[in-house]
Image (cartoon, rainbow, N blue to C red):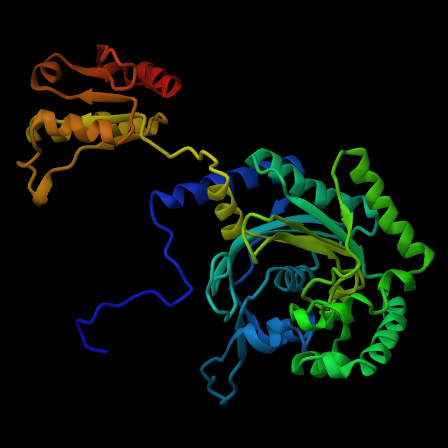
Length: 438
């Protein structure tokens, strides 16, 4: 690459710039507030993990492990040994690893949430990127169906608080391992009788992961898949009772759901309850949140056996959905804009503005153009920028006001242009007024 050639971002890994970044901050704020009310605590795990964590945790024949992971060999150490690392393609495996490594379940279950970037080597398209972002919840150490219902209710409440309607909830149960084995054997026997309509990928997965064949998007296979043996017919009484208990809690809280016997999710670690929230407003990328119970993953990754349930939510898809429905998301604006007629006043202006900021007032300073303090610009141009900033007030630091130890506070949003003078010695008093008015 030539020295002065323009560098660009990696395809499918996008910059998030103002003002769009304000939408992300607003959404994250909504999430953090809701998580606090449900008593879920934040966890942050590394972006890169040992590749073996995802191979073992997600399953060797999943799409993620086979096709989508960003894996690489790290530089060799002094003994010539190099570690095989992977940028995290999802959040659950890393959270489980952290739980096991740090023995976080020693004193009982934990309710956790995370927000952050994930990485998958996919063809970029609307709602699907190579670096994407997820919100996730993981409730670990809880076996009861009430916690399955709790995490579903948490997601449902988020839709309400975001103003998103028309999202449908699909449920299924994957049962327990012995029930899935009986169903698996029946599936394999059924697929062996219909190989003529199966595509190459389905034939390859027929023995290694037959459940994933049910998730095919191939139109030529739909009739065959729809007639395949259903897992629900192989569930025992305990598995059915677990799902029924989840449904009863959802019904009691007015959360509509439908049973989808073909819902299997994309990772191998799920058992019992699985679910997805789906919208029809985003085309093929309609699943905006999905998850379920994974009672055997903690043991699989090396911990003591413990039950768990959780979900992941695609932030880009939710934000795209908010755009689609025309949701109004507030843009941040300073409380006040400092108008500075004379650059000689800058030391005194900074002293006042600094005290205002320390008191909790957001102040945007006018800055000189062209890197010269002398080029502060005319009062007219400064007021134009003050208005464009969205600030509620202009603070006018004129020479006459400063000589009397005062500043003029002018309203920019009431249509009247009302103004009053405030004492520089009483910053705290009028700082409270600025905050409450803005």
